[in-house]
Image 1: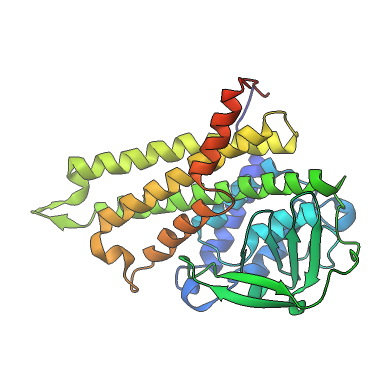
Image 2: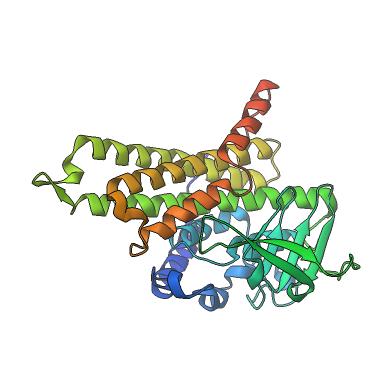
Length: 333
């Protein structure tokens, strides 16, 4: 079987990478909450997963994975996965969703807080059992809670009014209820894993570059065996995690019987690769790594925050262990 990305999928990722390099430089993370949002909207990024009848492109999660990874590499702030991925499964009929004219904040089952809720025009709270609460952003009371990522602030959300009838924005992508919420959880988890791979790749690249110029004891630190081994460990972790994420996206797209296990394996591996990359980056840079002056701190925070989002590595490893313990050794495809 051929598991490589197609030229079209890679081209989409390269286009998003070029846009983010031009319009979401590291300096923008200090001054803007949604840099490059309009540019991505012009590309149709927020309608990639929506069906053509809703002005989208009707692509699958596998198709958009290289592009989503680039949003992690750029440490792109804002509710990107929530709007581009989660909303396509939960509230695809929200007006102006495909054009990027709205931001969507999402809290999935079991999540107490919502990321970037203050930017959201539409708030979606998915509940265990398939229920979904949809409300306009100004219909909720937001309380900021402490978080590790300055570019991904978290909020507790309380609605001012009781539940209202569904405005007709939900369940437009075939089916609804508990199955659709479960599918949204899987898709968002895989997209977050792809972002983690992007974050890890950027942390590795920055660390290797710094190790090639920083000198100690009359030599660049990249020539020291201890530093080289740590960077090699990160490279191996990333290269092992990325195929698991690709596999999980394929399983989600095809609703494979192994999807739950594949998604957990991907999130665990990607989270561990990103946290390892963050630790090695900090060790390579030394104390300067987490100072206010160095942009590296944004990627460190993003690795830590996304690794904890939608299930920690430990939680997902337990799910994989449980699946294997029941002797579910099926392979797909």
